[in-house]
Image (cartoon, rainbow, N blue to C red; front, side, top):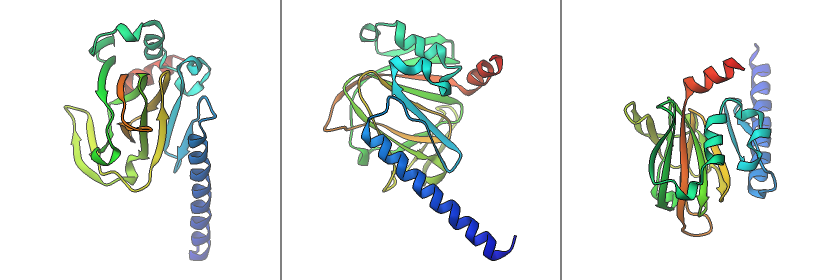
Length: 205
């Protein structure tokens, strides 16, 4: 490809990506959608919404077991700690913790597990950015399936209030449990879904 053609092509992609990012940010801030899925640089996608709407969202195919756990359980009464849904392939972590300032935390991402965050009570701001765009702070720890990143100046913020969820796939760095309109005591469930489990479920159709 000639240099002039290549330069124009790259400029056009940059403009399109910038416009898409602006549209996505505006939609997320508006809070007018029950669920909104988006792509960043064609490689990352986040789905979030109300629990009552999950069955109508095609992106959640294969995640029936974790969502049924959230629907069928009286989550207020489930003890804090780890609860098996399908062994180590799918399990829930019930948490009670205070929210924190975003500036005091670090982004995280995973390789083996998908994260499904659901808020029972309280409210939080959850940050999102493609891991490839962030500065690595702590290398990958296989035993914990996590790597950590510095908080960038700009990233997408998602409001997560009671009854709402966010799904983060590997490579999608996230900054959960942050203050939203002030500090809050959070009661939430994080469901871990192994990537092989989801792949097998989707292959089954």
